[in-house]
Image (tube, rainbow, N blue to C red; front, side):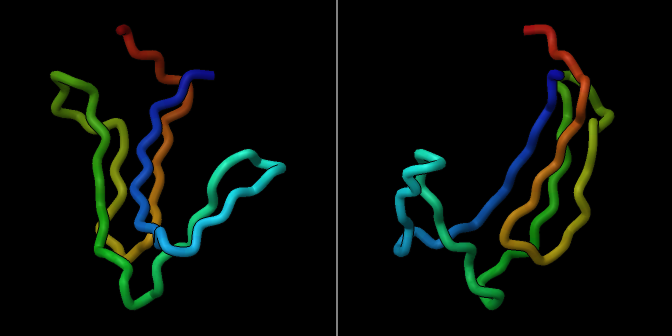
Length: 73
């Protein structure tokens, strides 16, 4: 099913490792003292109405999804 996705993350780069099963890199999240105040809104181009919003909060990682939306490319 088509999905609109937004991801915002803050990671530590020094201690990454390769996982053979997942075939990719993994990173540590930042310490609580380094987290950021994050918010976002996802808009379709030429629209004033957001598909979804995430309110301002203190995070190291935030996501948002809108299931079943198909964009004309």
